[in-house]
Amino acid sequence: MRGARIAGFALIAAVAGFVAAQWLWPREEPALPTSPAPPPAAGDPNAPEPRLLGPYDELRIASSETVAIEASALEPGRPVVLHLELGEPSRTDEPRPVRIVAPDSQVIEGAGTLEGDRQQVRFEFDPAFLRPGRYIVEVRTTEMSHFPLRRYAIEVR
Image 1 (cartoon, rainbow, N blue to C red):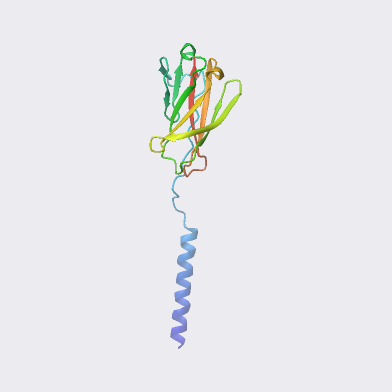
Image 2: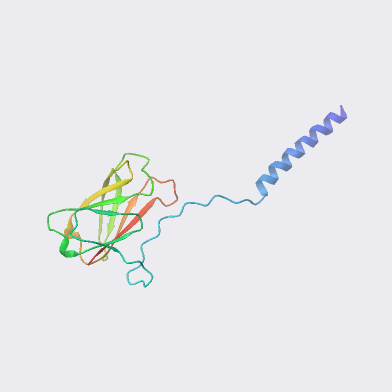
């Protein structure tokens, strides 16, 4: 009987030791997903040259990409149509919040519709909002991340 009691205590001590070792032992945690990097600041000598689009039909932009358009290509009354590529498909069919921030801090906010197997967001806005300068476009995504936001840049020349 006494031997069984000692074996029981030894088993409890071994389990407690194993649990404590698992809890205290340093281990590598999986890396958290990072938020998309903001586009480089205007005038940054290390910034890649933006992709220049001609007379626009519809603008397709990848996350963290900068595209440039000529102000002369904008037609008054004809909406600017953005197709913003998401890093991964949206987990829902709900429209995604879109925000465009102008160089003078004016903001357009709206909802973009999902398309392309929920891997792109389509958003239209009035070209009268655009003046020469750099605009930041943000889309709130459904990504499992601490910062579910994709950023894009449009440079109007």
